[in-house]
Image (cartoon, rainbow over all chains, first blue to last red; front, side, top):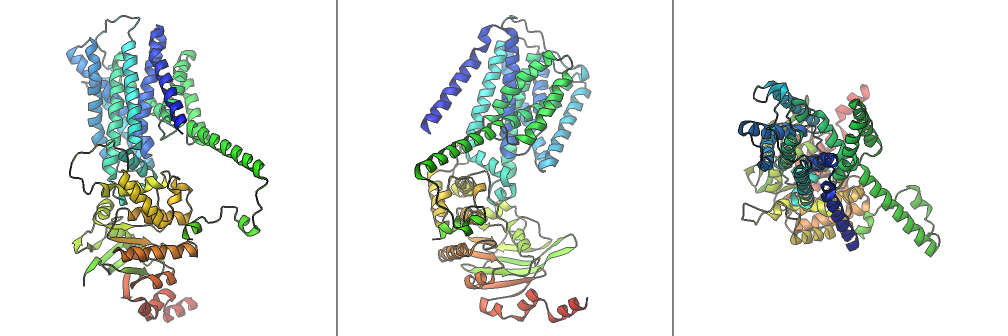
Length: 353
Length: 261
């Protein structure tokens, strides 16, 4: 076990080092793609902290993203900020998104399962409509940030490292929550919310806290996206595609696991970036994404990492069993009565004796 | 009379079906009380009304003469009423130990004076884990502590449910069919454990169809019929009560009606 943990730590260190070195290659385009990949890693991890742990599938995460985008956009529009100070605004985007998450959660978290999904979609469209219709959001024309007069060769580097920082913090946070009492309560809610409540878990408070944490991180990423993309447009800030993408990333990698969303985002975002460059018609990439979603849900409902992990465990167990069988000859025959049920004999009798 | 748990004329209807109709029962402190009655007589509904899993239409529930009517399940649990479910409900993707820790939550903080606590503290302190282990030993599933609850057999889940209700140390435990679908040896273990806990001061209210189990275990048995408590008394009295036979087997007139129909 110890060596396994060591291997994991070493692998993680190597991964982080490689990720940190990418911008030093000096390839602007690569760094640009990297920013988006890290942004999606952070968003998928944050989404998973709420949806993955509690089992409440939210398709309204883009609300937080868009609120983050517009918060930072509106501040810069009025203050016309251009220096490195803009990076200090991202947490503010997260903060406003977290504030929005409270009433959003209080309404949506009253219902479960499919109804919850529908409510999150409805709230999402309300926000998108507001963004494109209010005059102070710039309507459909959106908001454009003041021009950043930075060196073109390294312009994306600060975005890259900020996105990396947010993604790493989100992953560490997810890990800390997972093993904590709070995380245990979230997972208890996922398995049986009513039973959890009957055992003293304050379910609404617990769910809402996770929802707000998730919203805060995604809101920060929205703030970053605004400067990175240099516009705040209703259809991109509040993008239904964003919701589906991060959900799919978490599902592909392993819904509700710690590493699953990271793996899913690292796998999927480069593909999406590549597909959008290769194919002139971007809808083809989205159709492929939809098909991929279906395949994952049908054949790998628990995601790649858990399924592969299980297969490996099964193979190992089988190998060990065969090894012991070879060593000790064939197993003693079972009496006919015990074999008929096709299941192990009632183990509870063991405890009674 | 010092009833630990008491319901007073509790009524509940689901659509047109009157599941409970002015149902009044009382459970003495330190006793093992039984609740029997035909299917659909309102036993589980009464459990739900007591533990906050539904709203009463009228009537009240008292614990220690304090009204607990209409409180949410987490509050009822915190006040000292624990329950198990007819179809066992455990957290299937958590380990057996994690199941225990979820239930231990409010007990862990009972002695804590500070309002602020570290939200990222690891779940389950050493004391909690030790207590959980003791209870798993007590119910005989300690070996399974590290296994996911979904791998447990039905009987083992019943034991886990009992164990994690116990960790919160409730005053009274409501058991919904603890012997249902469980093999005879295990039924023996369960009733033995209930008796032992009762000696240590825990009060029980048990819904069960297994008459041997109920009559052998309970001090007091209440019979529900059509959502109403028709009779209550010691087991030997109940066994021979005319109304009980009516409730379970149908009255002579009803027999005539059904045969005529």
